[in-house]
Length: 508
Image 1: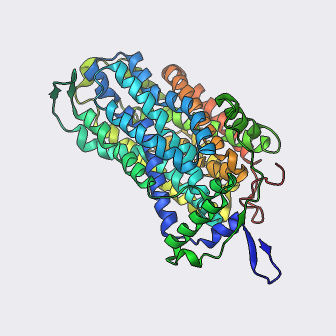
Image 2: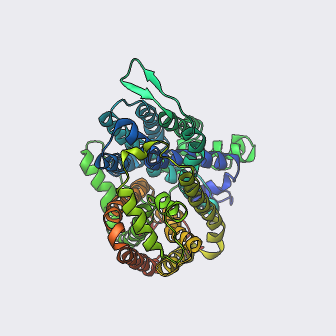
Image 3: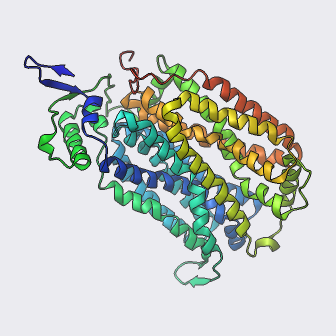
């Protein structure tokens, strides 16, 4: 901060000013709202997979049509992420969420009463396209509104919300899928069944989060980066009032400055030029090295986790409801399950969503979210790099053991641990917020979605085609991928107390 002749602060750096707002009610309220929105996004992506068997029975869908429907949300997220990253960096974090999330929720509700396969696919594509804004803007809004000493924990807690998504879906699905009703809707050529009710109920977190976003504030750092110093100070005063209970007049900051350079956006530039201006700096020095490291680590983790997560119910059920699995390796059981799933016919559609399937996913997702929360307390003393190395190491050891263990329960546990490599998401998003300047953070986080979901989508197709006949070779390939991620994670920046949250400012 700058000091005048009377030794009274004249100007505060942004981080110093943000620290003066304290830590309390506003920070936790913002965290809850953004967690609900990020949960809504992931429900939009993965929630449909729970009802897909019932949808297929109701609409008489072929296997290829089911595959297309399950991929539609991922495609929507990948295509739209660039646009929302640009909006978050130009219009604002809060403004982007207020614009996109309500539309996404309306489209979600509309999809629940879609009468045909085509209309359902179109509505799910657009709903996922709009809810993906939560990742581009939500993480950054939290990161820029919380004092630096709590920033890593808060971003990690938001990442935990993504881990609990299947837990939430399946807990809701258990009572709903046991219902049995059929209501003909006269004004639409469709029949209202339990799976439609489930799609409506799991839209509630997004609806509540969108309403909550109306009561929180824009990122003060974004406002300052756009030259709106007075508005930024006013936001800081309101945050201080929420956190401390003191009046806005007691907030000592009258002038603030940003300790980093800001690129000036021109509204006359075309959409593609703006996207290029927001993307290219991430892959040029001095940001190039860290961008390549972070996105490769994300690729390794989510190509493994997302691909196999879709198979968690099938593989877990195979150990309990299939043939005798004692004395068999994981791949021997999984291959049998994959072959039997391909031969499943429409006669199996009655009560196709089995309670055991939902219980298996509840265990997987619940443990995943709990471990991620525990990591938020470990990352402080260990540091982000060491924690990332730890997660990769556990996943690597679990993957290798998975190929040889012949004890059913141990195979299931090792399989879950292998997929928990996705726990590095919180660290990666924290790095993206800390290592990139304000005007690039929205695009940096949206690119993380493109990488994670894009390669996750490819992985789903790869596993589906290889699991039945080449399981051991395929898992060995993913183990090599995890090992490469482990090696690259050693090149992550160390947590330097002096430079924590210092965004390569003087280099830009």
